[in-house]
Image (cartoon, rainbow, N blue to C red):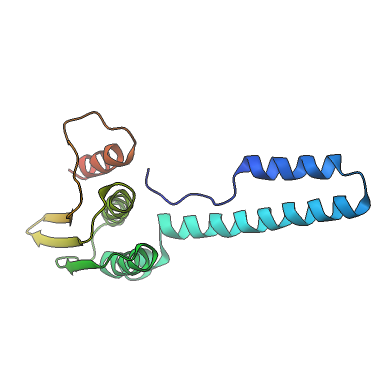
Length: 166
């Protein structure tokens, strides 16, 4: 999916450990251990960051609109793309599984836009009509053939999440 990834790979940690094993002097071993320690600390920070991004505390504490606003702000700072958002109909709070699914769909859509679209404009609009909530994520990027087989899991996971919600 489009979820952020770890900056340190397990392979790099294993290579660091191999360097520790192969060190010929105490100085080499100390330097190699320091490198592995740094990689492990960075990985722990990444895991915490990923956990927050997958299910941000703002979603639990304040609801979908504030969580999406924070996602949009973080996305805009990271990518340089301004996101025009009109988030309506998100109060009263939706059921937890619905809010989680909509958050993850928006997150995946924004990730796909950043990776593939070459867009200069992005918008997210939500609205509620009775029991039906609609979320539209648009960009002015290059587009894609929606009927072509998906190359990644992004569109598939968004479609599955939406279908599970009905």
